[in-house]
Structure formats: structure tokens, C-alpha cells
Image 1 (cartoon, rainbow, N blue to C red):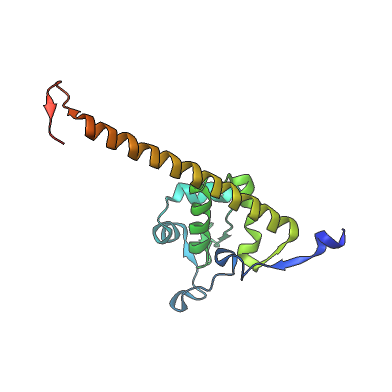
Image 2 (image 1 turned 135 degrees about the horizontal axis):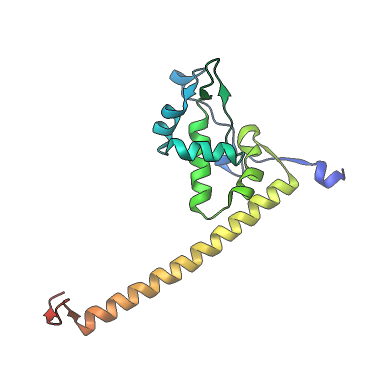
Length: 156
């Protein structure tokens, strides 16, 4: 391993969502069953199972075979959801998540995070441009007049 790739960068100061999550004091040490995690995170049980299949979320099994999760899994699921919403695929998310648990990242992980951040910023610029264009079209339509579905003039 080269010196550059062995360098570990603390990312707590760089990216709040990458810092280790402290569980709520009342939940500390309490494991969550899959239904409770789904409820608290606002996702379906099916989504949680998918995240596990993709290597994004881990669970323990009780003696009865039921999945249980650490309270910090709620924030992890929120982070996963944010990344998915930003268009980051699961194969990339799985490479970004180690910093979530440890608060540290290798230089290659940091570079990947920066690359994904820059890609999100570009998508935001594109969405902003589309939003502005749609606003102009709406304004043009309102100035030209709105026609109802039956072809008669409608008041706007």
C-alpha cells in the first residue's frame, strides 16, 4: 500500500453525515426489530431487506431468527435514503458508508465522496435550469391566456 492510500483522513469536520451517530439516550443499547426500524426511518420493511442484500445495512439475528438493528441504524437509513434521492447508486453508496460508522475515510473514499458531491451539484444546476425554464413557460402561457379542456377561454 502506498503512503497516499494509507493516509486516513478524518471526515467528521468535512461532512456531518459521515460522523458516527450517537443514539438517543433513551434508545441507547436497545435493539430495534425490523418493523420498528422501518417505522422510525419512514421506509418499508422491504426497503430494509433490500439494503441488507446490497450490503448497505447490517443486522443481528435473535435466537428466534428475527432481525434486530442498533438504534443508530435509523440515521444510517436516512443517509442511504438521501444518497438514493440524490441519484447515487447502491454500488457507490456501499463504498461511502464505512465513514458513517467510523468517522474516518481513506483518501480514495474521500475522493469518491467529493466526486459524488460534485455530481450532485451538477444535477442541482441542471434541475435549477429546468425549473427556471418551466417558470418562463408558465409565465408565457399565463400571458397568452389559458384555454380550458373544452376549448373555451378559462380565467387564470
